[in-house]
Length: 159
Image (cartoon, rainbow, N blue to C red; front, side, top):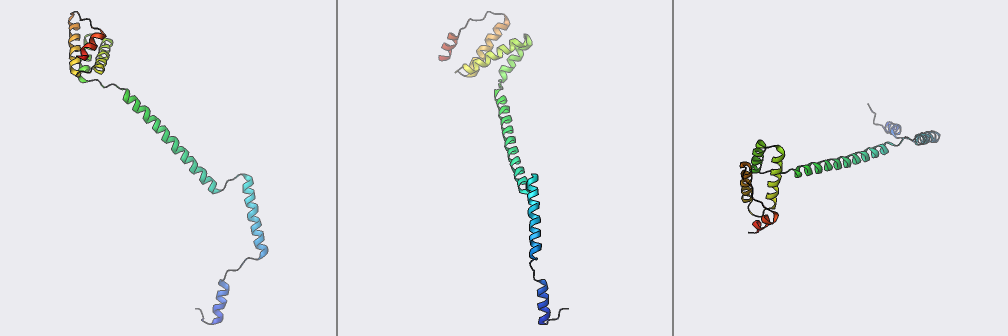
């Protein structure tokens, strides 16, 4: 137990009060720290905050490179998707019928022709396709086809 006399309290406070190290010891410790810092700098070892900075910079560069890679890949994928032609069901059915009667090359040629007609016609699409289907049916039946030129197609579109 602590005796509450004034002498005991002063003695305890004097023991608890921090004191400075002797001047010679302080100088020796500071010289040792300075020499250790010099050897680390001379050895090329970076400080820990320099390593953290490099790690942060590397992660930022990696993130930007990943973002650019994903963006480029997605743009190419969407461009390929946009290039696909969507063929209407009636054109696809007619192409399949022609392919079963003739060969695939003829069917693809007819499909390209019908698609080009669909893209060119200003009239309702079904009218142009019906006319082309009738013409193909006449061709399949062996009947002579009517000679049509581009000027005939243009005059029909205007009327």
